[in-house]
Length: 358
Image (tube, rainbow, N blue to C red; front, side, top):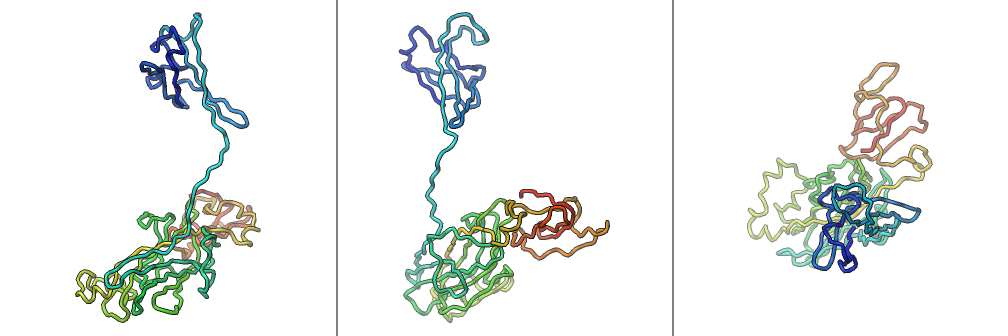
């Protein structure tokens, strides 16, 4: 907090003989100019006291006179100026948040100006995109997410190619924690399904909803896309799915002849989201799921992953699960029964479970 006093309001008192409740810290010394005495006072230092009631927090301090800074008592009549800053305990915070990403307009040599639109759909019919006013969208873990990327161009003989799609917990393609859905034109996530489209400038696909393990409660989907001349050989679009070894055998875009360069546009980045994870009606009936979905189940015993049965440990095969992701969670319905949990893609079995935030 900051205080300013006019020197004229303190006749007969010199600024060098004024102090706060605790002046032992040099940062708590008062300062002055020709007209005012002032100080910037931390809320947790300089002898500041805190009082509260049902509505406010109050931070109090005082300016007093002194003869010797080391004195702790006095019997002289002192000047004392009490002051405080008051903060309400409750307040309203408003923030403008635009969730839905509009279509993007780009220009490529040989293709002119065209647009990319990334939308989510309610089902595999792809008739009407989900209303942007309903964003952020909420999905149940394991339910299918239907997506479409569409390019709009005045040139008919063109084809859209989706080279990669990734998921991140933030709208930042360079964020360190990412999950690959499509890479090099190949499906990486095992639940991805490509749907047939009405024309070559549409790409429709779906996958099962998931969440990032940890405190992240949302997912953004980002894709790298480009346009090519339909039927033109040796463009990235004509390659389709390639692994790194096969891809290295194809000439890079800047090595193509001039005609081939015009047959392939530049790569562009499109994203949409966020998607948030909700609970199904069945899950909401389970007492165990009254806990935060971000909890990961860990066995009560600190043992290596495996099944405990009759005092003997039996190795168990790891559950199929993508690293860093959590698609389904099956908590115990009764706390005192034996319980299975999913920890980093491995199943463990023990007694009463312990819950740990990750």
